[in-house]
Image (cartoon, rainbow, N blue to C red; front, side, top):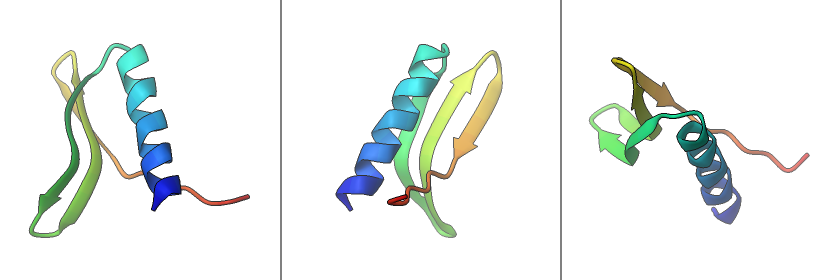
Length: 54
């Protein structure tokens, strides 16, 4: 789980550097979970983060 958290933090930081506002992280809904939800210039971005060892 530590790798997944690290990857999600990295992705969220990238979105912030690019000027996005983070709306939610690890948002749970009836269909599952959304890792990073961000917003910029009227566009809502939903990002599923995958991390692997190699």
